[in-house]
Amino acid sequence: MNLISVCINHHTAPVDARESLFLQEEEIRNFIGEIKGRFLAEGLVISTCNRTEIYGLPSNHNINSQSIQNFLLQYKDRQTFNGEYFQHFFSRPAIEHLFSVAAGIDSLLIGDNQIFKQVKESIEISEETHFTGFLTRRIFDAAIKAGKRAISETEISEGAVTVSYAAVQLIEKILSALGKKSALVIGAGETGEIAAKHLVERGIGKLAITNRTNERAERLAQKLNGRVIPFTNFKDSLHEYDVVISATSADNLIITRKDIETVMRKRNNASLVLMDIAVPRDIDPATSGLDYVFYHDIDSLNIIVEQNLEKRKKEIPKVKAIIEEEINNFLNWYNSLEVAPTIKTLRDHFEAIRHEEVEKNVNKFSKEDREKLDIVTKRIINKILHYPTVELKKNNEINPSPDESAMRISIIRELFGIDKNEKEERK
Image 1 (cartoon, rainbow, N blue to C red):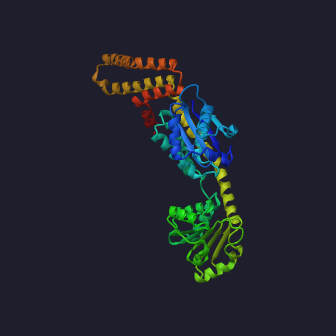
Image 2: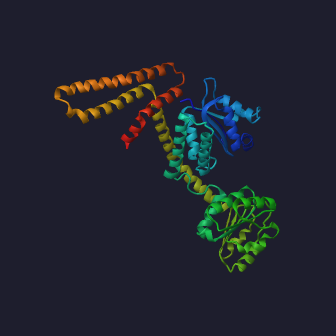
Image 3: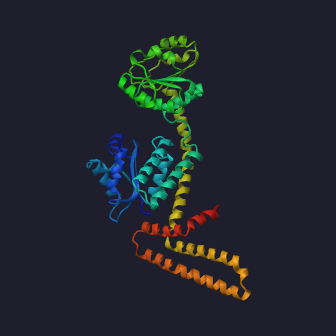
């Protein structure tokens, strides 16, 4: 299997290096246009905040993973880039790495479902740009199957492993029906934005954003269909919200115990959830002593995150077992495309058809003719298969590319429905 892979990711390179090689969707499409045929016959390009990875079958024998790496650096105008930031995989290790990425065990956050979606979207781009082919399509289908099985058959994606998500999960446990609740997110930076997105995904009834820079708050509110509250007087509206998540970069507390005492009087002591995920803290921890106030800061949330992360780590062996199984399934299929097994399978396939038809009609012949019937039908099958058998052997001898040879053999198997019949027999 000639699959090669070139990868730069969070294991190998710092964030600034990864950012410099990140490819937007339109860049991916253009990049594929540049490498298709010239470097790779078929393949896949994945680019996220944590990785840029290229997989494919070389278009000729002179192309290797270093060729792809060099072209990527040239494409992004990074000729002086540190080559030690890259990983190179070939054949089975390349397949295994792709499956590990799709299954979430190679992610910065173990079990991250987002990467599964990103891999699927990358495959769709390859399909749309006609960059997938006979072999890679089977590999990608197997990778997606491994990812789905990891999610459904293990607990690798269970429990929050980011503070923002842990905060929202805890809010949901405290208040249960979020659809009837309202939330205010203070701070529109990365942490606040992630928390706001999780609230929307969990079905929060109303969402408001406040931020020192109003423009940033407006962009996030527009994206999430929320409203904006001016930062200068957000305290006047605090009593309107059942949930307050604060994630600013302020040096000092921005919400005091006295502020919350005032809020609770206005709320007639209706429950209020305070999630302080800022460092340093935004909300006075003394508010935890107030009745009907549920206060959590980043320390208590980190305990939840660490517990969930440990649970996910324990699921890694189960995911690896799934990956191993799916790789073996793929390689068994791939090895079935070799000439000798295909010739035998082809002959067995036709012999089964011949035998079935003879058995159906044998009573129409006399006992003396039945032996002749058997001999004649076998000769017919041998003559039908003689030319395909010769061509298969000849193709194997003169064809320098095992992947191309496998593709031709598979066409024969598909024409005669061999794989389909074998699947039905296994059911």
